[in-house]
Image 1 (cartoon, rainbow, N blue to C red):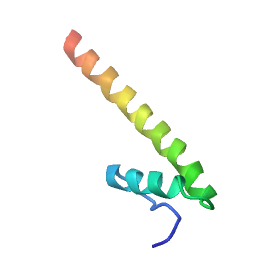
Image 2 (cartoon, rainbow, N blue to C red; image 1 turned 90 degrees about the horizontal axis):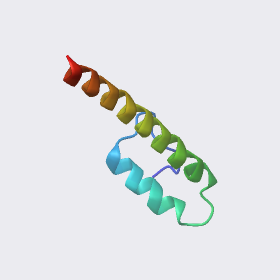
Image 3 (cartoon, one colour; image 1 turned 90 degrees about the vertical axis):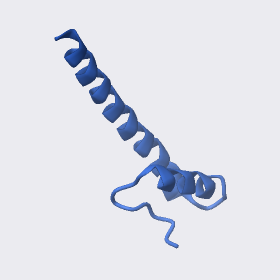
Image 4 (cartoon, rainbow, N blue to C red; image 1 turned 135 degrees about the vertical axis):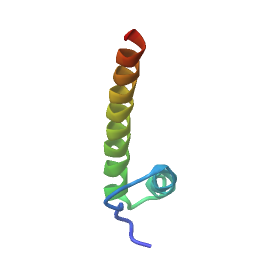
Length: 57
């Protein structure tokens, strides 16, 4: 399996990335995990703000 991340990661892939990250020699994967988490946090914020807006209506 390639050490490089797929174009469209999903939850199960992030677990695989973690297991690769703790192994030496996977610098590419260690950069991908924070990027994946950042994207996930941004999406969660957008969802939260949308739900809060709906709740106020």
